[in-house]
Every structure is written in structure tokens, then in C-alpha cells.
Length: 365
Image (cartoon, rainbow, N blue to C red):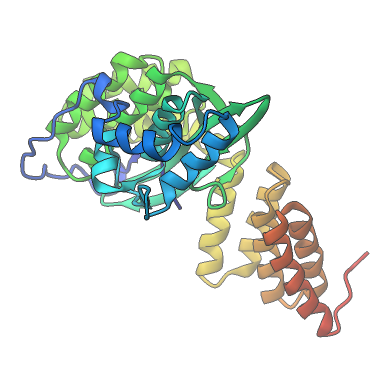
């Protein structure tokens, strides 16, 4: 999965407190530098795009070629760890989703296009990194060209979402940059270096529950439990069902031996996860990997009840039903997946259906 910005969950109860890594000289760039286009990039973009046409639609097409084509363009490549400024992205030709949003937003505006950042608050992209469980949210660039809307997104086919994107201002986007860098540094063990990045993030977007949760992670890893508690509580004041803050605060109280305060937070966290289709899908995948298709199928069905429009949930259910010998049920689930998928995905599901039906199965009515 392509992670774009991070909401880290610190697994205190399981892992304890890690030692800090050797010091780093990494310091936050000023906000004005993050979206700034360097002169060499501006000149190359002018020659490849702006000098060739004044028509907005043509400029958009030329910009997309400039971003991805190596000959005469940037030839950008994806790197999940490449949280860069626009200038750094130009120098390295590497970007994650957040960096690609910064780059495409800056260039779209340089082309005179109406562009703004967009955020998707709930996406499925969980992974374990060092001593942190990370859940990633997503950003991309939205444009309006002659009354038509477009989205520039390098990971649209690789993330699971259940809500449409919402427009965010530049301050919120820059806050995500600083928060992302802070969490990357914290995950690497550079807790002291992460602090000024988190401070810069909260200065730009002080009411972000995700930012406050991340600030709590950094504070705790820096040895300041009181500040961590304050940040987690502030996150929950703004978003009472923020699972990361619930989990982090309950872990903190458990570590301090305060079971009375930890227990209700753990219960709230469990209730949030019970209503989270992505969590159900993850648990189903874990059960399937452990050789328990029956439990996996039950979790996948729960995910479908919570969010029926995700074709990958239905596909996973079909796979586990097939493992249990329920070919007719698998065909029914694959049919639902095919109906929900795009043209390319639908064709893949149809091929699977054809193979199952050729084997002599008939779907249940």
C-alpha cells in the first residue's frame, strides 16, 4: 500500500520504550520552501508546458506527461519513504503520495490551473514499522478545468476508501508534511529531531486530531508522559472516536498502572474497531493467513455489512468460501465483486467466474 501521511499508533503495552537512535541534523524547512518551485524546474516546466499552449486542458495533459515521462520530463518514481519538498522531489525524482500531491499542486498552479489538495480520512493501509503500528490516510490533488473535475492520484487503484475526498487548504497540507516527517523520524528513533516538526505541524493546524495524536507519540517517546497525555486528550476532544488516540491513551494508562482509566478507553477503542470495516478486513486476512478460512469468511462478511461497496471485500470472501468447498457461494461473492469493480478489475473477476462455472458450478439463487 502507498502510504501518504501517517497516523501512528504506539504499541506501548507490547513493546516498551525504545532507545533513541543516534542524533540527526534534520531540521524543518520553513513553510514557504515546501511548495516553492526551484528556478530550474520552473524553466523546464515552462518549456515543456506553458510555452506550448495556453489552453487549460492541453496544459493539464502536457503536465501529466512532464511528471511521468523520463525523456523531456521528470520521470517521477514512487518511494513510500520520500516525504520531500517540491525542490527535493525535483532533485531526487522520488515522491510518496504526499510529496506527489505537493509537486502536482505546485505545478498545476504554475500552469494557471485551479487546483487544491484533497484528503481522504479513512483508507486501508496498515503496516508494522519498527515499534509502531501505522495507519495511513491519503491525500491527492483535485483540479477543475473548464467545469470538469479531475483528480491526480498515484495510488487510486491501490487503496481502499469508504469516503470521498474533501478539499483542504494549503496550511493543512503543509501541516501534514511536517507531521509525516515527524513520524518518520520517530519511527527511526530520532525523537528529538521529530519534536520541531510536530511543533510546526500543530502551529499550522492546531485542531487536527491526527496531528495531536502524533504529537502525543513524539512526546511520549521523548520521555514526556504528561505532555503525551495532554495531546491524546486534546485529540479525543476534537474527535472522540479517533482510534489512534484511544489506543495510545489506554496504553499509556496501562503502562502507568492506572487500570481504572485505561479500561473505558480500551472499551471505546474496541467499539470503534467493531464498526470499522477495514479492521474487520484486516482481522479476516490474518485469520486466512493462519489457515482459518471459516473465521476469515465471518470477518469478511462483517466488513461487507459495514461497507458493501468495496469489491475487494467480496473477492476475499469468495476466496475463503472456495477454500471451504462452497463454490456456489464463491461465485455469488465474485459476481458482487465484478459488479463493483472498474472495467479492468471486472474483467479479472469475470475470468475467475468463467473458470469456476466451467468446472460445473451454478450460483445459488
